[in-house]
Amino acid sequence: MTTQHDLVPSIPAVPVGPGGRDALIGRRIFPSPLGRRITYALVFEILAVGFTTLILALLGNDSSSSFIVGVISSTVALTWNLVFNWGFEAFERRIGVTNRPWYMRVIHAVAFEGGLVLMLVPAIAWVLGISLMQAFILEIGLLIFFLVYTAIYAWLFDRVFGLPEPASHYQR
Image (cartoon, rainbow, N blue to C red):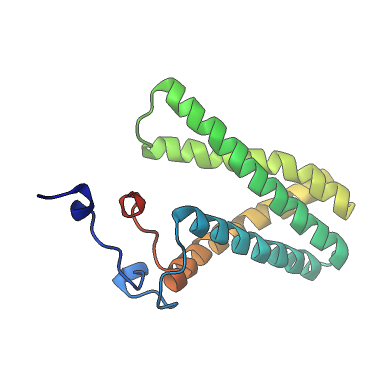
């Protein structure tokens, strides 16, 4: 007799990274998808604060003010991510979206980044003592940097720790 457990493929001992190669860490360390997501976000944001501080300091801003902007930006981005995605998913349910076609992904990305800009520009201007236009230009530069950073970080994280396992692997 075949059980549901028999139908779920076994989880490999060494996670698979991008391109089907073994992950660099060489063993599975995340017991659940949630642990992987939390680690991903924490490491991402710690590095984001460091990069923001460095970029702003290299542009001639005081290093302590640059650090404060980094911490504020990271905190706002994490909080906005949770709130925005909860609201966006509720909106999708309300209008009956059962998958996320490309145009919904574009709307999602533009609305998320637009909200982030609206919240961060005044904070950056205030902390650094610059005009709203200067803060807007800085924020656009940071958004471009973080677009590239996010892609590289995601690839490196997957290369080191392996790709996430399908949810079916965690069902009992």
